[in-house]
Length: 91
Image 1 (cartoon, one colour):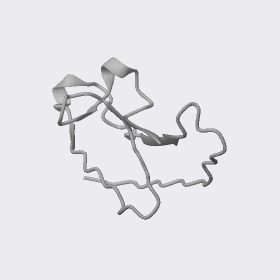
Image 2 (cartoon, helix red, strand yellow; image 1 turned 180 degrees about the vertical axis):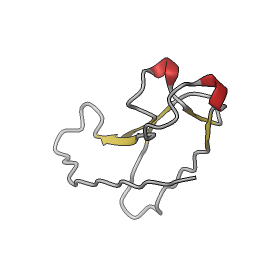
Image 3 (cartoon, helix red, strand yellow; image 1 turned 30 degrees about the horizontal axis):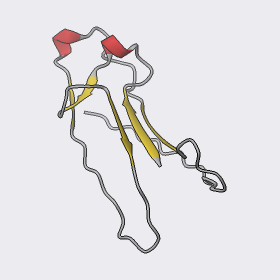
Image 4 (cartoon, helix red, strand yellow; image 1 turned 120 degrees about the horizontal axis):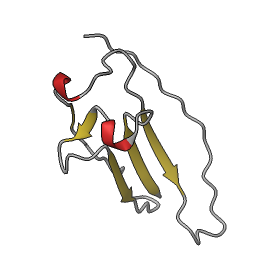
């Protein structure tokens, strides 16, 4: 599977308020190899909120997205499912 995480995805790339600790980027992409009978694969990614002085918009929510897609040439395979997770955390 091709996995992609986008942090603060509703903002333009250069003005995103949340970045990943490793690489200081607003996105992560990795190809995941799944095999029948293999144990589950987990990835922990740490993100941080940039300093408030670095951005003006402090009221709009921070939207995250996780995309899973079949790689090109994956003939005969079907990716099925629909998941929507939404949480609001106040601070």
